[in-house]
Length: 408
Image (cartoon, rainbow, N blue to C red; front, side, top):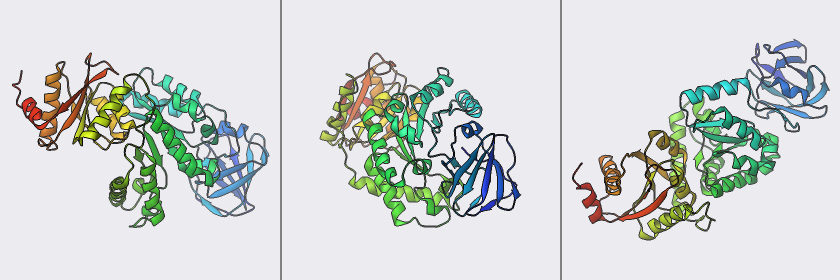
């Protein structure tokens, strides 16, 4: 939720009054200490009650509602500068509206047409919001990420998880919607729930914020990224640091270095006692433990739907998961999954040819160590999602054998 365009930035002071209109207008200064703006979710203005708070610009400006009717008036309680398209939060207001706007519907339709991998759904309140988003995919197999940034989303998290393909800990808005001191524990709770469910989770917002304009991150920011990694997040996300920052390449490099060093002390296998998600999950759990026990160089996972690689990731093995799929589309979506490196596509029905092509692709990329042992998994019937049922240990001699198999 954002304010509309403004004729010029407003320098707001305590005691100023800001009026929110339902009509789409360009915001303006009406008189001394009086300002008028529009909002891109005008329906919410019908839900606001006198005495509730409205926060502007990532929570830096606080206003208290003093009048509600066809328009909403609020009195500013602290100094701040408001510019066009800045965020608006209603932490005390139960929204209870369709969070998917007409524009969202158009964006989802565009994403389906252009085969987008992931759709992040903002301001999710419950599982019904995700079901509505799923219906708009109209059968397309894109992944839905629920952005957790509302207080009622936290209350309904289990329902949301059941209807999502992943979570985002959207800490910017979440930190306004709930008490600031609850954000770290909510973050850890969300990461744990996603880990247990076997779905990717993204930790986002202000991770290296000071680097938007500074060359180096603060020590607190570095620790924040590291702790998200140690908690078990699949993805750490940059926002304005890379979108409008002065040196985005430096920011990405910094985050990459923090992740790499933190993984040196990562508690691998910390989830090896998880309950199985289904009977095929026994295979995924077994292969990760086997690979770790053997000290294997990698797990070669041939997956039709991507699910088997995601399930392996759930157990957080020390051994890298090298994923192969029958469809490139599935391969690209696996880039967001912890510990998984997508390698290439394979279209073979015979196991020996599958192993040969997996090894050949690794060799062609220069990442195959022929002196090490690998563990491979494939499934029968070929191409059927969820059918991974075969584990193969590939010793150096077997690797040589498969690489030298005559071509068809």
